[in-house]
Length: 284
Image 1 (cartoon, rainbow, N blue to C red):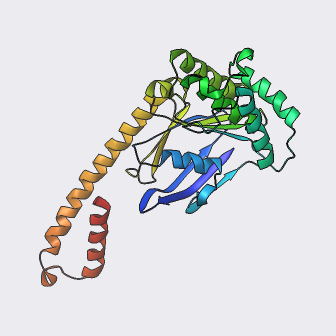
Image 2 (tube, rainbow, N blue to C red):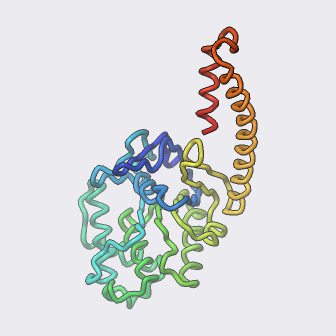
């Protein structure tokens, strides 16, 4: 696996976002992360990126990546200086990325990489001198993507995107779908994205994982697109409902037995009482 998360848990403030979650990412994956609001999807993505800003690491568990893997992260909101030109934004991202890898950044090389990467994401060459603040939301999203790619020396092996379809029009969505698909098909690379866009999941995802405390392991994953995931989820829910019905029947018998009082329970009562309480806890 390019990336392996094992038993990771995270608490923010007094709220437990997720607990004991495990997930692997392999070359060629286009993994969509979904889940209810407040499930901690963006935090989970940051942990996968290896962020340690302000103590943001897993409280439990571990995240391992292949040695020297180049990871590009595209945040939900723009983080660049709106007064800088598009070329300056991408050059700065390349320099910062090199510094983070312990390399000596070279301004000239960063400028060349910026020009190449801006071309990759479809920026017209005459726009490289435009101030970022004058761009539309869709083109700012492309600029964020260009900066992320440049930070990984122009060739990321793993790209992590938080709500990448926000602010994109139909043309921008079509371009992003083709870009991610080509990137993961052309060479051993992978993409992980948090999104609420079901159409995007349907067309792009090769795996879908739902982060939710409703699942015993905190996460339910299935191969295929969004439709495939919904089938797997329904199978899980049907199985869980059947287990619940069976367990509820056992608990009813337990309660009837417990109500008899100590004299009516017979021998080996303590072990059966413990088992009854375990079943009640599981049912709850």
